[in-house]
Image (cartoon, helix red, strand yellow):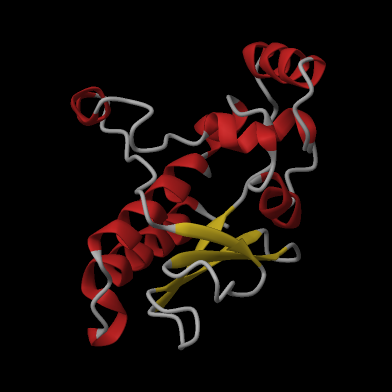
Length: 168
């Protein structure tokens, strides 16, 4: 994918999120959760993540699996873990309270959620945004997952977490 294609895809995704996808209003907390995953999947962030150490092929299906691991739980910026003022200063979106994540299919017991799916052939993380998991998604967003080489700090962090019993 060329830089121009990537820029167009990113612009389209941003417009879709901000516009509420064809008139469907997407609540602010769900937009914020999508933004957290958008930031997480940027190549510069993936190379600093334990994901690239745990899954060197960086496949979207592996990313979905990783997001439900102890390692990802340690890396995701949750509301309450970081003071909002610090997050704002760093322009870091925080995972909002009350928004769940599910793999592959909606979990009707969890309420508002993002459902993570994948297309390895295209290198895409696919996110369905649900206000009510018993209904159709409000929007579907796709992010490209690029293969990256992890930093030494990511390797050390991964090794320390696994030694302490973290699962992935």
